[in-house]
Each structure stands twice: as structure tokens, then as C-alpha cells.
Image (cartoon, rainbow, N blue to C red; front, top):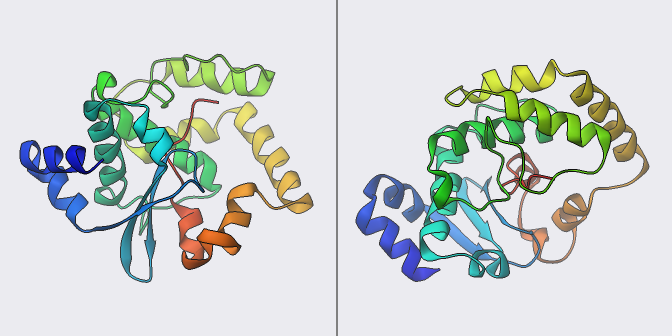
Length: 196
């Protein structure tokens, strides 16, 4: 990881400048990578098994993706609810601006179905919607298109019901174990979403 960060700083100084301002935390508590603002500090979290599975180029792409969440203020002033829909929208905006070959295949990309086809009918319908979205929209535009989908609206209702019944695993991480040092704002800027 260190070599990837150094390479990014040397060859893409815009991203290197942003990455230098992160407090970096290696953790197995999240499945991929993510950023947050905690106690007025920019935090970068990554799972070493996730990043270790990729080449230096893809690791740098993941860091660029995470840096853009902060550059575009997705974790600070530009936030919408429900968060999981906003996170999908921000990932679509960011991933559409980066080269596909520098990002993991599990990412969400506008105009492309996930490589792993969802099994659940509602998730399949949302994946089909994402496949129709154009590249180059702002996060708010992707958010609006996602929110106008009846399948997304049904998923929101189901999600709200699930939340009433139990805590999400990432919410439990926030209040116990290694996540206890993060503030509740970590939940506002979740890890790079998988296409499932």
C-alpha cells in the first residue's frame, strides 16, 4: 500500500495532495475501503485483504476514488438520505470519471451492469437501471434518477423496516470494537460499494 500511495503522490499530485491529508487506518472491520470525517480529521480506512488482491494501479485507483469523495464534499456538506442511495449515486459519479481499468470490477459504473449479476429481483432491477444511466452526471443527478425508481423506493421501505428490527453490521462496528474510535459520521461516508 505504501508504494501505491507514493506512486500516486509522485505521478498524480492532485490526488497525492488530498491523500496526504488523510489519517490512514488499516482495518479488517470494513470489507473494502472508505473515507470519513472524524473529530475534524479526514480518515481513510482500508481492508488490507481487499487492497492486497489488486495491482498497484488498481490500489491507486481506489485511493483516487476515496480522495474524490472528499474533494466533491460527499462526506461533509453534500449529503442526502437514505445514505445507501446517496452512496450509490456518488460512486456512480466518481467511477464514471475514472478509467474502468484502474478500479475493481466490483464497483458501480454508470452504463454497465455489475459483473456479478444480482439474484434478488429488486436488486436485479436496480442493476438494470444503473446499466441505462449515462456517464458524466453529477451525484445529485444520479441520486434523482435512482430515487425515481419504484424498485429503489421499495428497497428503501424494506431497509427502513430492517433497521427498525436490527442494527446493520457496520452500525455495530461503529459502537463496538475497533470502530469505537470513529464518530457517527463514519456511517455517512461508507466504503466503496460493491455491485451487489
